[in-house]
Image (cartoon, rainbow, N blue to C red; front, side, top):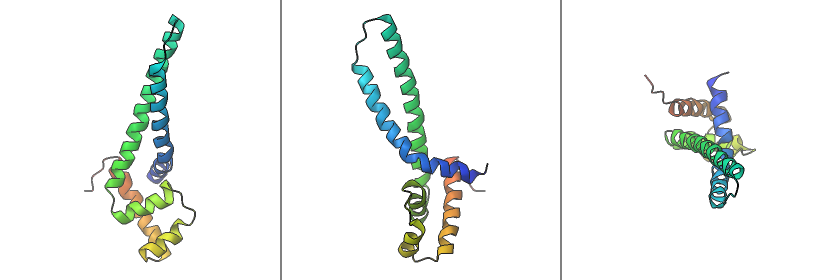
Length: 128
C-alpha cells in the first residue's frame, strides 16, 4: 500500500471521525448521569465508560492530527484536498479549474503535491 492510500483514507474519514467525537461525548455524558443499582450494572457502566473514553481519545487524536496537517498546507493545497476528499464534491476538479484559473492537468499536479505535503505533515516528516 502506498502512502497516498493511507492519507486519502485519513482525509475521507475525517468527517466521520468528527461526528464520532460528538456522538461519543454525548454518550459519555449520558453514561455519567446514569445510576446503577446492581454490581453487574456498575461493572457494565464502568466498562462502557472506559471503552467509550478510549475510543473518544482515539478519534480526537485522529481529528487533531488531520487538522494540524491541513494547517501546514498552502491555501491552494488545502482547498484542493478539502474539495476532493473532505467534502467529496462531485465536480471538484472542474470547480477548482474555475476558482484557481489552472488547467485540469495542473489541478492534478497540485493534488499530488498537496497529498505529499499532507502526508509529511501528518506523519511528522521534515523535508531534507
